[in-house]
Length: 485
Image: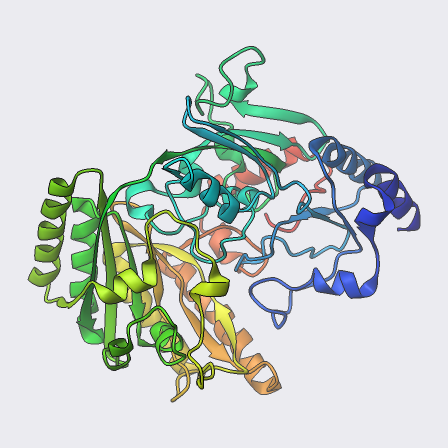
């Protein structure tokens, strides 16, 4: 790789290229944790500063038949950015400008590594908002969020991040730079609309796991912030999960703005650790047999909001939900659309310690119909119990986002101790069995990645073959994230 390293330094400058083993090891880690057996190191890391440099890097990689994997903040949970075949890791962090807020077209244009946090703060100054607020990390890169078609708060009303893309600037694996959507018109109105009369080429890059091209700039739709907000938390016994699912399904069809579902194990880390923003009386509201739904309705009109709140409450009460009031929901969700600063949002009260200190976590991320959620959750809990990850300190944690009028985005987890080899081995077996079993049930992958078994892709049948054919057409040397498909 010595000649390749020198050529990369000529493209981006020597300060933006590294083959230092310690640095390469850091790029092996992703949000899933270092215990997953497929985590591997790249051969070299390069940080481009613009799309021309990205193009030259990909052209060089094509000529040398070297695999290239792009990386944002490394917050993904399914291994989309794991360099399974070594090669070049392209860290996009230097391409972080917020280029333009076009209020005339209600579009924001940003480079791929501009963070959602920066975007939300700048929009907030103008009374605007991106329709969806990612919950996991406010500093995730916009490009990675789009490539993975991210979810988050207000997905019930606004779908997924990809639904709000108006244009993309993409560098193909061959090095060709192109703009998509109305952005493609050289003398047109700019990045104002996604559809140009032909096939939806932007859709090709969403949920692609970075295998079809490198996104360098993004144009996103923005909306006016809603002024009036209603918060409420309802609770159900664990054995009444079908009633909870039916209530959420009816709320989705009725038009809920946003919601989260949580169980005891996902809430315990917040409450027992003393999250400063949660009211003190919340400590006594949770037990292991309880599941809660934090519901939000927003509107530009106060009278309309009151009607929405009344009908939403009736739906939950009619499906045996217990009304816990607004405090928990308001404290945990915060103002709608605002950016979240996790450094201040999660604080431990003086004299308390995190209850899961020393614990690592196995994460899962799927899409499933709302009314099928009880069977999804029963299966997940059964595997956690089978492999011994349910005791006084841990259990199957449930955290669920909305997707649209009838779909959920479950984000379950369980804890294990990374310093105990036998427990790590059990975690890996449980992880594999969980993913394979859910695939057989018909549960959908959030996005493809190295941590997913091939069962998910194989279930897609001829459409999976089409994906691979398109990949071969766009990336004839299979250099860009080659292990994803």
